[in-house]
Length: 42
Image (tube, rainbow, N blue to C red; front, side, top):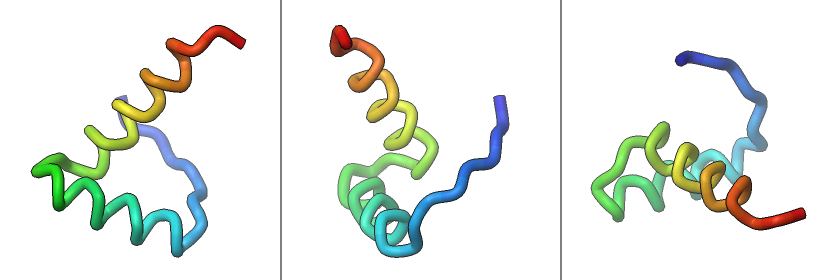
């Protein structure tokens, strides 16, 4: 599913670099991060 979110420029640049270094797309990196966040009990 596609969605639009606002992300600070510096954070987005860092996320793109991290995804590239891991051989992931930006979407994959964000999805992984969301899954980890949701898995932690609040």
